[in-house]
Amino acid sequence: MTQFVGTHTGKLDRKGRISVPAPFRAELEAAATNQLVFRTSHTHPCIEARSRPVFQKIVDGIQDLPHFSEERELLEATLISGSEMLKLDSEGRLVLPEEMIAECELGDQVAFLGKGDRFEIWNEAAARAHIADSKKRVRELRLTVSASGAGASPLNTTPRSVP
Image (cartoon, rainbow, N blue to C red; front, side, top):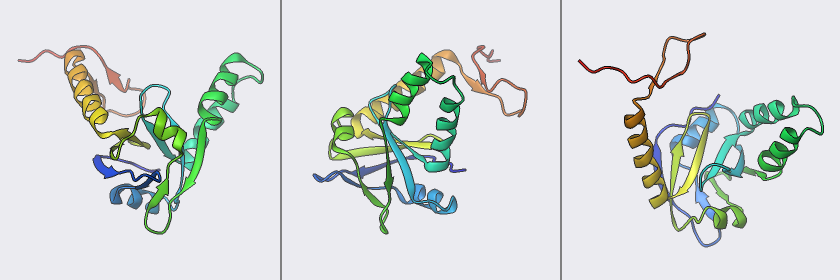
């Protein structure tokens, strides 16, 4: 399983080429894959990238839904139909689809945000704003994460008292 962590900046050239950050390439190499599934996020102005095995888990979850159900149809159209499988070249580069670049308003400066099993590609200024807003919201909500393992709620929104 891949673990993409950290924030890295890079350049997007006029042909839509990017170089995936070395730490992310190392994760893909450790997972024995150079194939990624890219899609425009339905929640943020960014492109999401997942390894093919991680994306397959999403597809499996959708295919567990009843055939012809509205939920399945919506998720297939949003998450599967809007995705593209891309392969890194020998130097860790790839060409992003023009439609995704335009929809996310990516400029020549981009940011790669590691988010565990995926990474996101943002316009660099928008990424900085997203990170700052997320930190602010976490502080306001006093969110914590349980590290106790199975059976524990992974997210705790109960404010903690400070001595």
